[in-house]
Length: 125
Image (cartoon, rainbow, N blue to C red; front, side):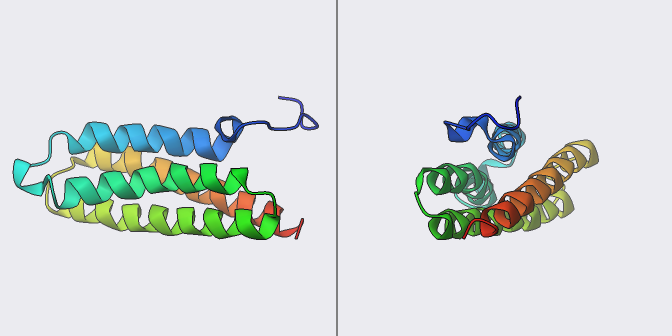
């Protein structure tokens, strides 16, 4: 993509695209969690994952960079919450090591991209 091209939709943001992959992965992996976790860890992980992309989208729609940064930071908080929940799921043996590593690696990528988006947005305040 041309670096001078104006991004018109949050779906064009690389951070949103990678976070969306993470949401889909979380939904897929939590399908196999015990039914007793439907209102526990399964629900928590899905809500945290969706919150990541939702806050990126909401931040994108705001007109001031101060507002954008606020939502991007909330997104980062949800990502950190999900990273903790991944460790819990792994330790409870709800996630095998392969699925844990895939989700953990993707979460690190999203974290780095979010940090970059926040840093870049701060230069425009």
